[in-house]
Image 1 (cartoon, each protein chain N blue to C red):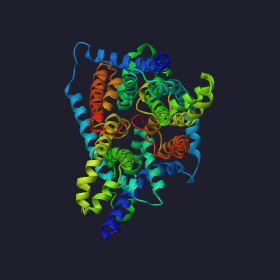
Image 2 (image 1 turned 30 degrees about the vertical axis):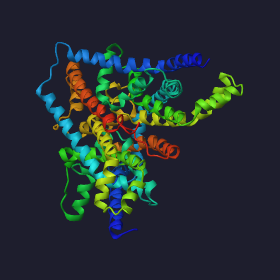
Image 3 (image 1 turned 45 degrees about the vertical axis):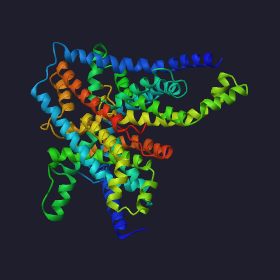
Image 4 (image 1 turned 60 degrees about the vertical axis):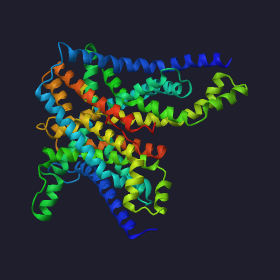
Length: 267
Length: 261
């Protein structure tokens, strides 16, 4: 009786998943198949500007992810472990940038660091030099803008990973007489390594796909998503756009396939 | 216990956190204040809000309708699937569950191009826009509902109800449905908020007449004054903040909007 029920359960399961499967086939698998077909039509044509933009994208995303991780380690640890009354407020403040799309971040960067941005204006009235004026439109502005939404993201992602780590190991190491530095190196780092790595990959892949910021700020530093946008809307070259889209998808999938490797312990 | 080193560490850690939090909040606050700065005449005027509502009112309405549709459709697709993943797994169901999460790792602009290439004859249809957004919302609906169902012994509860003589419909109404309420509310809030702010996949799939607010902001920023841009940002925030607050209250954990936004 149980096995008959199990069998009917399987068919129930398949029937319930069917809408999702149809949706994924129609909106994900079929379009990606067509995209690959168009990009590979008469051979893959990858030229120097595409590779340049791809390189820029990867360098920018790697750099932003690295800086974000380094800057967020301490705040994430503090939020996860130390008591303070303002913690809830701090955490809420950190979620604010997470809901902004790239163009909003770009606008905020211009507002703060544009030619007559608030920071240069403030500095001009304080020290007489409008430092940072126009920085928004250069490489500095781009990096600052990416960090604006990636540091909070990395902090919150890492915090929730830090919260799941058993505090007793550190306490045990402490009672066994381990100095702070060796506690960090021998106990905390091995326990948190996979969380740090997967946060790094999350930050990297969000940066890789973001293009609103660059669209607003800088067209001179070409990144792949903006080049795709330009190829499609400006040059009306669907094949070029498809080729670059396929390149971007390939890099994103490579990064995503690393996540289970660094993350074996968690889901 | 609290050595001097520890106290110094506390101070450094919290200072860094406070600085990051301030840097996160001050720019949008400045943008909202900017909205009240009238071009010439008197300071503090609501004029730019009026302008935004008049010019982008259509976008706002379209965004609301689109977000409602995306939320409903994501639940219709996601909830049954999540129920199956959690309670009626079959061979291959784990692979489908993983496949459903794949779009979250894909850049929105590439997905948009793929959808345009795949459905060239439907170009400009709002269903493509909704479908593109749903690639980034359905995974959340599935995950939230499946996680909840996995954390309750629903099998056992259903078995108990069955031995007590409850039929399928009765079991669903009195055992399963009450458990689904919370995750479904949570998922619909998340999906609505995601759709409201989405830019990456929406920008290329939108048309001038059917442009969600997330994509319309680009036009606002590039062609209007700082005051109008500030007002548009404030209106965007007014739509997103209540959802965020509700999410925080329900979830008790900060929520990351991830790739799509």
